[in-house]
Image: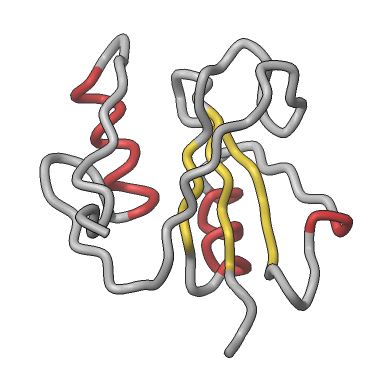
Length: 115
């Protein structure tokens, strides 16, 4: 295949500088560069009627994380609302949590299963 990975994720924001700073503060990403060291990236279109993420949003960002519990503790301490559901988690797929950035964009946090 000629495609070797995602070269960028671009989206509109009301305050790009503030939103970029929020992503940098909470996830260490933002600005212009981020070199990934993890595995596969899933690209999956969903039906327009999906309830997997908010119906008024066109996309959801899924971030692979290495220590979900520690990240959730940091986000909670920063006042970021978190949604978890044990039904989302399985030994085959890993663990998940959901948050929204300050502009209401959905973010799914994913800790893959241990290999």
